[in-house]
Length: 422
Figure (cartoon, rainbow, N blue to C red):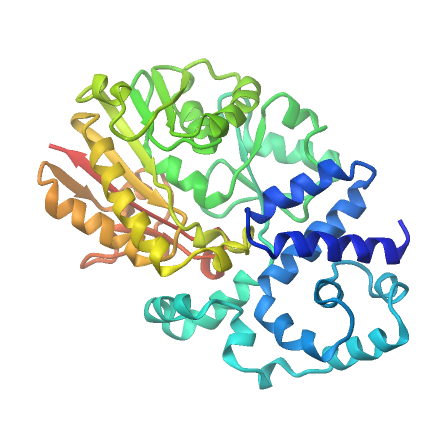
């Protein structure tokens, strides 16, 4: 496409995304369905331009008034993802001069909000946790996330898959923490690769892989993924169980579970049983009470640990939403806990970085559910031959909870706590 047409499309898509009526990824996907003539390169340019603007929105909002023309076009120019010569070919002389002035601005002279690009309500909770590390986190959240894969250990070995990808021209290295993961140097198309088609690999952040690892699901057990979603952790757990036992994948969204079906077919797993439930007190849950060996609750949350991938969330969430979610998270955790038999393991997790959704929920559950004994996450990681150094926090030894941060671990932000029923 001509540079002017690409820039016009970027501005059009941005105008739709910035209404914040729907998640950005859903708006982008719908736009691509409506504009099927767009090729892979054009789609990548549009998507990355949108996400760049969402990541750096406060900074670009600060610069935009000094330009001319419709605001979505000015934002598209500032966030354009592609060769600079290509962009310049789409600009008027006035726009070129304005862009040059914007490029010359020293970021060190900006206000804090134009540097961190976070909503005011989110800044202090992060500074309270991280202190001087806050700026490292803020910088990492303004960068795209790497692409991690999980190797299906039921059918393949990580080293062999890495060599297979190498032969296909894809650079992959083992993830530093997960024994199942590979991190790619870039973001190549995967769906036509034989490794993808036969189910040897799935896209899954390394942090999410570690959540599945914490469950330590074993052969022949009865296991529940209580908030399964599209099933990334479900598939990892099923493979760890060596396709034995029974693994229930529950979710209140039948639509999300539908996304699991093709992934499940590729995985070669037959021990997974997806089921939509009405709510956490569904009759299906009641019938399984006291019968389950292990339960993982990857609870609905703000998703603020995934801002590298979903930067629109920081503009769509609020303190009120956090408070509402905390009530839901506590209720879901209590209901899921009822499933466990004595000796069973419970894991609570989120992809949030806020203590209100994490430590506060775990500590309240420990105080309330006295039949559940906390298990230091560091001990579970050691049992799984993963060095917990730098991965945990909380408690006198700093080993109670899993705490992953994008700037420290190059994963999404994750939290997890574990208990054993007495």
